[in-house]
Length: 335
Length: 273
Image (cartoon, rainbow over all chains, first blue to last red; front, side, top):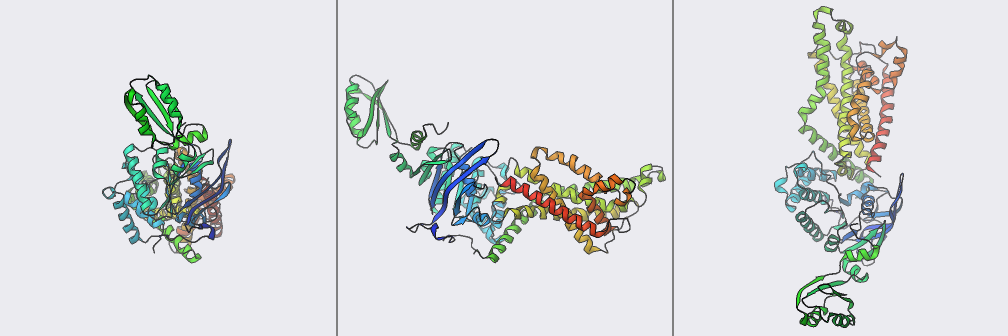
C-alpha cells in the first residue's frame, strides 16, 4: 500500500479554493485559554489557510502563541474554540486520521533513545502502516537523502544537535505527510547546522510538501517562507509574503554614508528630502543617513551629491521583517 | 481509504508496529530482563526453601515456621510478585522517563491511532513480560528447593485466564503509576507502594491463614496482589487452601477495569493539554 496522500484525501468541498489550489491547513477562529491559577489566553482567534506546497512562517516573540497553535494543529492540545482541518479532516473530531496527514518536528529532540537512527525511521514507518519491506526501503532512502547513511547504527544520544534535527525531519516526512510542522527548527542549532536545516526545508519545497514553521528569527521567516503571519498575544497582526509585509508596513531601506568632510551637508540633506523616494535625510556624526523606500535610483544620486565630501564607506540595510514587527507591535522581536 | 474496515486494518498495523518496537528494545536487553525478573524469586526460594531447611534440622525457628509445605505456598505468591514487579517496571518506569525531559513519548503519541490504543499497547506488552516472569518461577520452584515443588498444571485454562488478567492488572497499575507519579519520585514507588502491597498481599501466606487476624483478613481485600496470589494458588497449587475461583476472577476483572481507567485518564492528561 502506498500511503502517499497526493492528491489529498477529499474532505468537504470547502477544503478547495476557487483557483483549484487545495487548502492543506485551515485554521478558523482558533482560541486556546489555559485555565490554571493564572488565566492565559495563548491563542486568541487565529484564522489561517495554507495552500498546498507553500512554506508558511509563523513569526512572533516567545509566548506569542506559536507553539500552542502548532500543538492544536498536531492534535496535542485541544482548542477552547475554533476548528483546525488538515486536508479536510477535523483534528479534534478525528485526531487519529488527521495524524496520518501530519509530520511534526517538535522544538526538542524527541527521537526514541532506545532505537538507532535507522530504527527510529523504520519503526516510524511501521507505525504509519508500512509493511516491513516498505519501511526498510523508505528508511534507507531517507538516510541517503539526509546524508545519514553512515550514522544509521548510531543512537540519538550520540548525535549533535544539528544531526538529531536532521533525523527528526527525516522521521517527520517518512510517512509522506501532506503537511510538515516545524516548531522553532533552528532553536539551539549552531549557524552551520541552521544553514543545513534551511536547505533541507527548501529541499522539501521541491518535493511539494507543505510546511508550517514557527520561528522568532526574522531572517529565518524571511529566507524560507512564501508567506508569513506575524503573531503576538495570540493574534495575527499581519499576513502576506515577506516582500508584501515589508512594503505594506512601510519598512524602509536605510543608507548610511561615511564622509570625510561634513561641510555643507545640511544643504545636501535638505535637497535629498525633496525627493519622493526619500522619507528622511539627516546629518550624523560621521556622515549622512538617508531613509528611503528603496535604494534603486537613489544610490547613484547619493554618490554624486556627496562626491565633494569624500565618501569613505556606504552601507545599505534592506527592509526587514524585524522593522515590520517593531512597527506593528512597538517592541523588539527578541525582547 | 477511510472505510471502517480499512481504518481498523490500519489501526491494527500501527498497533503491531508499536508492539514490534517494544519487542526490539526488549530483545536488546534480554539479559537484564531475565535478571530483573529472575533474581528475586530465585533468592527467595534459595534462602527459604533450601538454606533454612538445611539449618540443623529444624533448630531454626523460621524454617520450622515455614515447614515443608512452604515452597508450595511461595510458588504462586512469587509468581504474583513477579507479575506485579514486571508490570510496574515495564510500564511505569519507561513512561516516567518518556514523559519527562526527553518527551520521547511524542513519536508514539503522534501515531495514527487513538491515544487509548497507544496506552493499551503499553499494557499489553508489559502483560507479555509479566507472564514470562511468572512462568519463570515454575521451573525455579522445582529445581531450587530442598524438596521440589511441582506446579499442578491440570487446570491450565484457569491458569491462563488468571495469568492474563493478573498481568493486565499489573500493566494497568504501571500505567496509572507512570502517569500520575512525577519522574523524580518514581523510585519511591517501589518502597512505598510495592513493598507494602507485596508483604500484605498473601504472597508468603495463604489468605485463609489470616483467620485469627480478622482486621487484616478483610483489610487486605483492597490489595490486588491478594487476588493474584490466591488465583495462582487455586491454579498451580490447589492443595493449599485458597479463595474460590469466582471471587478471584471477579476481583481481578474489577481491579483491572478500575486501574485501567485511572491509568488511561492519567495518560491522556499527560499527553493532551
